[in-house]
Length: 457
Image (cartoon, rainbow, N blue to C red; front, side, top):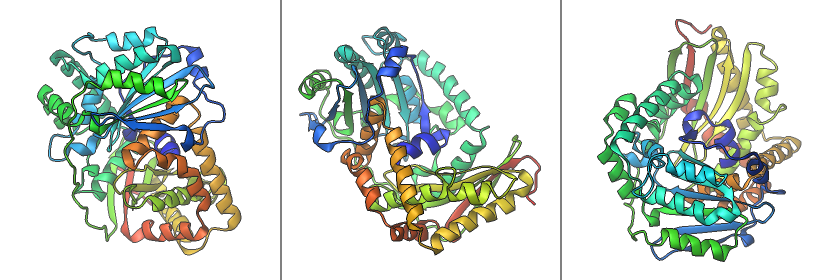
């Protein structure tokens, strides 16, 4: 599930963000839409401009606020065959000025409207969004369109931002969760673009040139490869008119077709042990997971299986591992929905001398899920928890715009509208089926991050 798992359970490499401009306190309060969390497909309007740009508008007048989210289907995975880290580097650079706006002016303009501006890069896409009071929709749209379509990418700012990204990447290398997931993706996807870290390696970041950024932008930042999502207090006709004015002049071009290499099935256990300066160990059991493009129903069923395992105080990991074993400090699950098959994981933080016992406990919980149907009461509880998470992570207009853009970059925004119904339809047999198919201990990747010179007992 995108909303709960990519935002809450997913480790920091998946949530790389470049800039946050502080918004006024009233804006943060007003951005909450009462009763939000369930998307009404009948209220959403979408169209495609003559140049190929997809536009989605979800009006809501509960608060005098609007969010504009521009999604580009060109995340880190689209660097395949080239230098790594360009997509993330470009995200950092898009707010560094345009031919008509100098360095720092983009942030200042949005801040002068009482708004906030932010961005992020995942494997499948990058996105750039603004939250602002509705009367300033047109002005904010102009700023965002200029930043996305016409970045100046000044050479001196490239070097300044390179230092920022290098420092950010070095910090991630000291975070045990980030290290564990990076190693898991690399081991599980040695031939696929998903196996590389979003930010690239330090050497790759140092090698990225301004010309690399220009070529990446010219290749992928074209209208046919973008979606503009608007959520909030704005009339659809007015939104379409303003977006056509701001984005319509962009040249109609097609982005290249992408065919990712097919990763061979994993048929064995892979184990990676990393030593880091940390007080406790992190044990991750990662499994190849379904992708949105080909196995949408399996994605929803695995979301529910992960909720049974690790969502809430009475989940199986909390009650059977953390509560039962005093040397286990924290437990959880993570599953970031992606276009292509990705990874789902079960993890625990524990005493570094009890790594083997912790791993055995994780295996036992998964084995039980694969062996027996989930009782009806537990299944219904997991459905309620999953529905609650989806609602809570779509309370604000910004969150709703992010969700619609996220799914539109995968398989289409309508998936967000049907998600809750899909969860309600699932059965205990569905959960057991995906657990058996995907959570196979004989085809998993173990990653253990432990203190230096520690040997698991």
